[in-house]
Image (cartoon, rainbow, N blue to C red):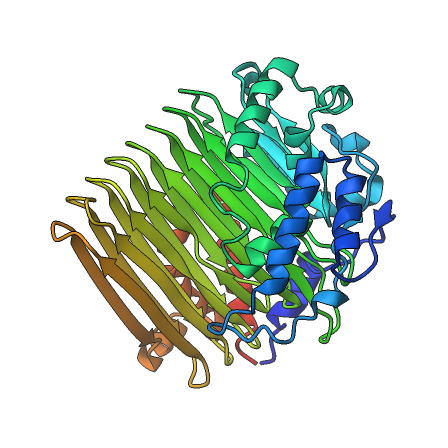
Length: 485
């Protein structure tokens, strides 16, 4: 029986297009003039304009990676680097333009905010259109804003978003202290690109010993064809604090030859005793090249967890990393990928043990079907003097047909003899006997395959809040429905 393809289902649920007004947009292409225009539009300080232009120069000098996916199809001069849909952002959904509000309503964001989130940020193309935070957290000094507000907390912005000047002043100082320090623009070609044209994203500051018990979420939506998205996120968890941040993303489905570019930078700072969990549910349309740099610094007794899923996009290259810079710091990285037809998912994780008694765990799970390709690419580095470090790495891949492929590229650099390190890897297929048995119990073939794959990826879904676990499992079911025809 012919089933509805996954991308048809994606288009209906997530890949729809919104006819939204464009307040301002730069011309296509990347140049010092475009970068300067972005900075001028945002009324940025001279030092930040210079930062952007220096980053652009570095981007132009760096070559494309000669490993991983083929990126030669990207035409960097066929991208709109800045597109603004509203004059200003709001902290009430009623103040968001109706067509944009309806987009996020259709995606379920306001409903999620009402039910189980402590705060929400919503980005539409290049700028945030909405930001909110529970009043109880405002009173504790928690800050959840966009980078523009952090860099330039004008009285008008503070009034619009209902922010306290005192708390914002302290948070802005923290932002300036750490901005670009975890991921400098010299790090790689795409970190440089983001640094040159970044717009939107999130800045979160959690004061000492504050526990944000409900998640904070940001949702990123690319809407216009040909527009790239280049948000920047910085989260600072002060001593003894705790926060869980969730990001989701989708984009319309455009014609096959249309390409979009998403290049983000994420910087996390977990100060002594802090706990930061960063969850990503990446579900871009198959038009999007998803090229992201994510890195965290974890200090004494801090814990950083990356929960990273990649289901959509044409190409993903993303390797969340943690630098364990203080004794007894801990890193957990869980990466899951799903590569279907014409998809190349190159993901994994990196951990650098730079202090004694640090510990880490990297788990990678990948599923490939219909000719899709998935790769695990990881780095484990134990520095000399990082005594008694412990780490485990496990990579499991599941191939659903003969034309799909998977690779593993682990790099282990151990410079201290006291380290305890383990590495495991496996590749498997779903046996015909298993599928036949489940079908004999009344399941269809897509349902049988979906059940097995959901079980394989359960290690990820069980770590999610219930509402997100349900959505994640539903996406996998849509993928499996599209794999049988």
